[in-house]
Image (cartoon, rainbow, N blue to C red; front, side):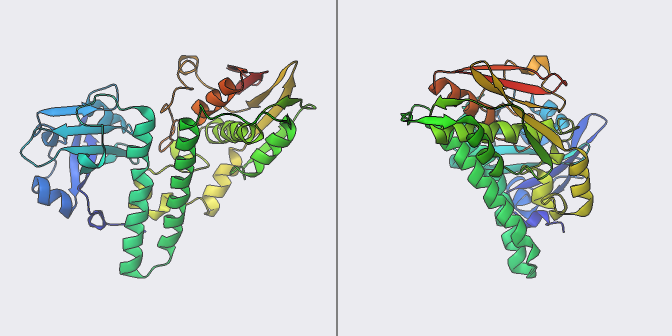
Amino acid sequence: MAIPLDEFRVPVVAYAVTNGEPRITATNGAFESVFESPSPETPVTAIFERFSLVNSTGDENPVTHLIRGDSVGMYLDGGGSGGPFFARILSSDGDTGYVVFRDANEFPGIAGTPAVDPVSSVISHDLRNPLDVAKAHLRAARETGDTEHFDAVADAHERMERIIRDVLTISRDRTVLDLTGNVSIEAAAKDAWQSVDTEYATLDVADTLPTATADSGRVQRLFENLFRNAVEHGSAGSRDSPDDAVEHGATADQILSDDSAGSDSTSSRAANSARAVTVTVGALENGFYVADDGPGIPAGERAVVFEPGYSTREGGTGLGLAIVERIVVAHGWELTLTTAANGGTRVEVWF
């Protein structure tokens, strides 16, 4: 059930990459009222050329990000087409994508900044994606009376709640821990497993796990993020196909079509089941580990996976593993990322 571009009250342009050049394929009324109606097959770069200042939150030029469909933002100012704007690239299928333009004044602190602080970026950038999803589907529901749109609204709200929880956790890393008692690592792991979407994954507690003087709520949060990361990235093929993640991010396909917003179809369930991952929690001499049997993390990425904002999954906040590291450090523990015996990812926590 596709939602027309005109359901969005902000400028949106659809594009396709042809012979290495991102070209406009469709626009909505809001875009045309600001930038005028472009000629068919106009290069997307023609829009950027209207501005004297174009900064990207990514590490490449805008054309490269458009071609790759990178989920980055761009600050546009100094042009005759209004503004300033903060434009977001949303990837779609194959060599297609969308650029969504918003008033940059809605994003304090971004103006003129080549690289946005990761946590601020999550609040001002990533949170806008599910918010746009909810708004578009709500308008469509009001106009069509089709109640199926409300499922997409509910999914978007759940996504926003998770982002808010992640941001609060990452921003409260200096909060005093409650270390008044011993925490069962096994109980924390099992409780965390029940609170994460793990329908197509299996938990294996391989050993008798230790207890530790710790903040029970933080330890459970640590496991929740490790489990979610293992399920989303550990499933076979998930690193090559972000849309197959267990928790779907707010991609352009979710904004523009219901077909990719949910995971309840028979084919989607069968595909997820076929990629089911096993997550193992085991004991160390003085700690514990969490391992999965997925494809693992490439050696070149291991140095940056714990940095706030780093994510390989479309729609991911990039805060999950950063939260894990901060919880570990707050307890005075040590963290090691290595390769599991079966080639997957193994995270070791030492007391």
